Length: 88
Image (cartoon, rainbow, N blue to C red; front, side, top):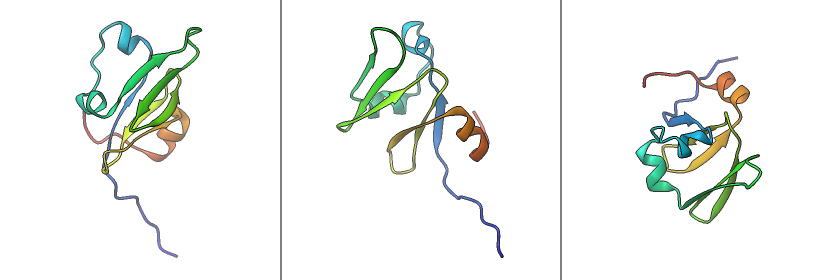
């Protein structure tokens, strides 16, 4: 049986609510692709809207931009299991 590696290259960053409130650098691709970012009043999660699709993002989750310019989220444990960092 053969072994395969996924070929996709993508951009990702780890989300924290303070990224917005403390002026931490957010990737320009995120700003271009996202319609709105709303932090829940109890600060339990953040709602990110892009192209009519709403995603819930919690602190520490990764936000990924695929090669097709689509955004999705990924929990840290799954991200670290499946992906490795190539460069900053």
